[in-house]
Length: 84
Image 1 (cartoon, rainbow, N blue to C red):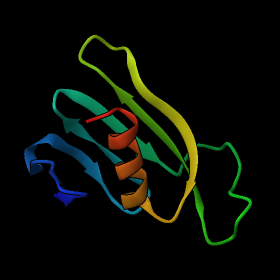
Image 2 (tube, rainbow, N blue to C red):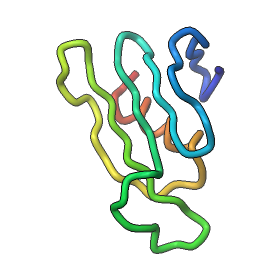
Image 3 (cartoon, rainbow, N blue to C red):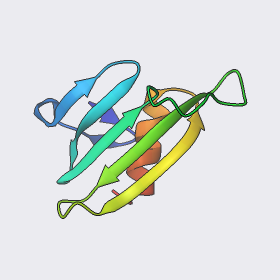
Image 4 (tube, rainbow, N blue to C red):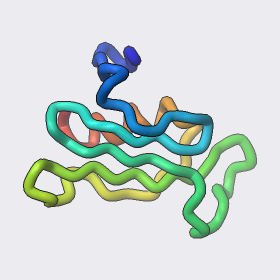
């Protein structure tokens, strides 16, 4: 999967659909979902995503809730937020 100039190898993706992404990039665990039960976006054109990136030690590199256009924008936000 190529996203924002980065390549996440298929073998490192554990789940990928329109609502949830889970995988590894540079030994960091990335989890993005819109199935979280914490409300909806104020803007009808956006979706609220829970974005979580943890490093190999288990420390959060990025842990956020953001209203974004789609799952790809949320993955880009996760990678940028974790400085990967």
